[in-house]
Amino acid sequence: MPATPTVLPDAAAVGVAVAEIVADAIAAAPGRPFLLGCPSGRSLETTYRALAAQVAARRLDLADLLVVLMDEYLVEGSHGLEQVDPTLSHSCIGYGRREIIAPLAAAAARAGVRGPAGLWAPDPSAPEAYDDQIEAAGGLDLFLLASGASDGHIALNQPGTSRTSRTHVVRLGEATRRDNMATFPDLTTLDAVPTHGVTVGISTIVDQSRAVVMVLTGADKATACSRIVAATGYDPQWPSTAFVECTNAQLFADRAAAGDPDKGR
Image (cartoon, rainbow, N blue to C red; front, side, top):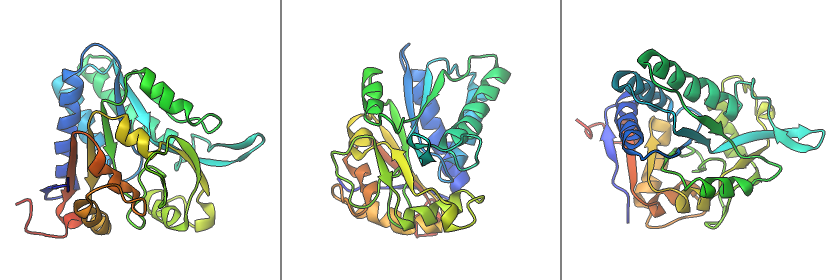
């Protein structure tokens, strides 16, 4: 079914709306691990900040919350491809610790409730074990999604990725790497951007999630928004169209990404 976006004035408004969905889902979950799939990067920054505010305001206990990262960059190490140093600013694991876990833990502490249970990331030495780990925990309760601006990558899935793909190691195309130069300002040249990553697959996103929310903000995401809205099924040449095959899928965009300044008023 074609996607119909909820269009809001700006990225801040989108962040607040999506954070409320996440907070409501966590609050309504039974007493078991709550798996929240999370991307790194610009698209969800306002959501993560707004979620921390929700935790503090609602005194939302996060003891069952597991943050499940989508991907990580890889570099050549002594035993083959390895995760980049998590202290680097472009590490997805480092991002998850700094921008997701730490603010949520701090907000929970201020509210006198428990912080997140942990952070998961895929292991490049055994990538498909990540799918098994997620499945054993009951699947992803909610997956937050974003789309690459230039090539429609989702997580680090490149154009041409199979619908049946599970977590895997991938060589990154130039378009994805250039997009990520904008995400991580310390990557000042294309040569500085890692050439490989480990990423959840399309099947991981679609088949292991009970609900998803796609966030598109900024004028550079206008093409992504139009491609996703027009999609009637998964198009491997624009991987973020996987969204339209997801269960309980919601699409949020700001006016700039939606390409119509009159929407959302």
